[in-house]
Image (cartoon, rainbow, N blue to C red; front, side, top):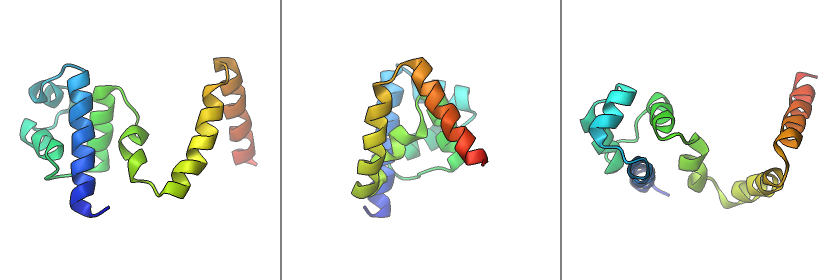
Length: 109
């Protein structure tokens, strides 16, 4: 995907989540400290913003960055991630915490 298409894709998703949260660009600007004009440029695909901007918008819309970035991954990476994601979704909250603790244990080794 070329750069302009990436910016358009990201902008469209941010606009979709802003609207799902019934927020105006001005309200998001107040929540994030970003300029309404900058939010508009992102939503129209003219600007992609920084990682800081990505995090601010994700916090405002109560979503994680992977929701915005997932479609930009190569297909083989998506398949690898989705296999484990689907399996984790089937676990109880307690079991998910146990799995995460186990992962943390191995990462600290």
